[in-house]
Image (cartoon, rainbow, N blue to C red; front, side, top):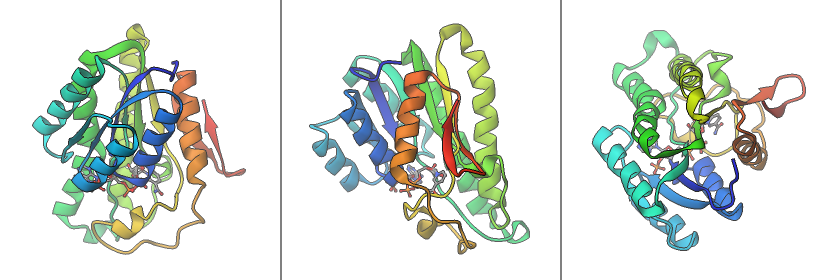
Length: 233
Ligand SMILES: NC(=O)c1ccc[n+]([C@@H]2O[C@H](COP(=O)([O-])OP(=O)(O)OC[C@H]3O[C@@H](n4cnc5c(N)ncnc54)[C@H](OP(=O)(O)O)[C@@H]3O)[C@@H](O)[C@H]2O)c1
């Protein structure tokens, strides 16, 4: 898809990757609408982007998510793409996982993106794109991260079916599965302490790969484990 002039909703724009994606899309000439939980950070980013339309929303509030999508489509005059970049993490052995934490992981990482995309599809132009931030752990479930891995694998499985079902509309579904990136996400874990993680991947490379993937109508951004570089395909 052409990013110049594209109407794009970025959900989770208050996060590090979401904010960087919103800025990069705006720099590429897209018209960006924002959704995020932290009202202060959301307002600041909206102002930085020249008064971008913005909705404060908790991802687990399905009605609020739908309202935020409708508001973004109304303000921009439709949507060409949605980018879902919200997410939470938790650490610890599977046998000790707290049920409420597990529920929140699945609600925010898997169920809320599905709700948002369902709400967006009637607004989405043919030839547009759905972009979902999953994670490398969807392919390589990691010790001490069973529930986070499972929630991201659930989202990736859903994305692979959605992609096939949307083929007739030429809507691309880009499943982004980055490795660890130093954004502070692990320090904001819902529970537990992180295991030893590899050095964080370059944030700018992740953002650039997502924009490349959108332009190409690609299906995934994944890491090449040997070369530790991102592949868009
Ligand atoms: N960092 C990594 O190593 C890495 C690797 C692979 C994949 N990812 C994925 O990339 C995405 C972005 O992560 P990040 O590293 O940029 O972390 P981040 O800066 O902590 O961003 C997380 C975002 O999720 C939002 N969020 C969490 N719970 C929410 C809820 N209930 N309702 C609405 N928003 C909620 C946060 O909103 P507020 O700040 O407004 O509360 C924030 O915008 C996540 O899906 C993450 O799983 C990250």
